Figure 1 (tube, rainbow, N blue to C red):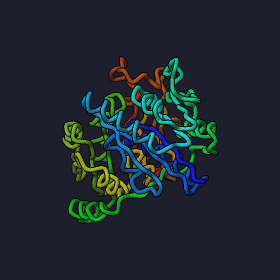
Figure 2 (cartoon, rainbow, N blue to C red):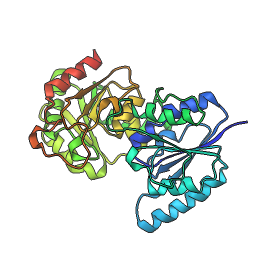
Figure 3 (tube, rainbow, N blue to C red):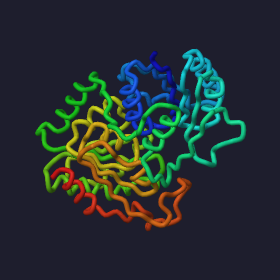
Figure 4 (cartoon, rainbow, N blue to C red):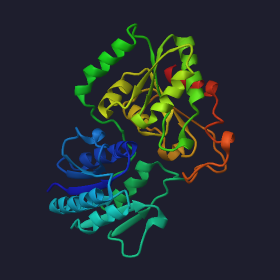
Length: 342
């Protein structure tokens, strides 16, 4: 009889991509498994084309809207009559869904300090998403194994892209770079400012790329990151560099897949490039690459200068110009670019 199981992971795009190895292993163990996944609205793209998966989205804005969304999801999850429920979020909202899920077995994976008296799960696995030492997927895999699924979390992150965006991506690149030379894809953004390499360094990297390869550069960011993207572009003098701002995830995915090489911080687009096996260089500072870094692309490099305060608590940085990412030099990053392309 096929298993019916649920996964709660209401976080960001990169976190959803990191679920892919787990889902692949579950489906290998039980090809008929019915998998329900609760995600934040706007993060579903990587899982939308997996067979046998039902996606449920949680509202992320407005207190009343969020509350009503949580109640509706709790009812929906309960209607699935789950054999297993895995909570990989551990929040007030995920607790409510877990409590009323009616699942035969429930388990959660979260920080040791996040556990509370009276929590709804039968099993709780303490994970360390700061120091690891293992990757996020491997840590979560231990919870699945504890509840009876032989999952390691160490498999490939590749997911099926949406072919509807292929033509648009090819048209965008043909119009932008008609000579069809190599393309450097830069993502200078990140959820926290102290996860970002300085914009002037990205600009100088683009210039090195242009002068040494004659290739073009795409500088990408979300709509709120427009100023950051424009700051990078304003410093580029020796390369044809164009912005890609606020692109739908499907288009972003399709363009990254066609890039010659990707350079960016610990963020969703880095994991898109990794899942697509694009040559990449990841820039790390406040998070450990051993925990959050790329794992899938056969041509991948990370640049990370360990400081005594790394990984940090994501609440700010007192080091100013001596912070971990400021210490990464342009020439060092370009050397890694040449290495992944060599």
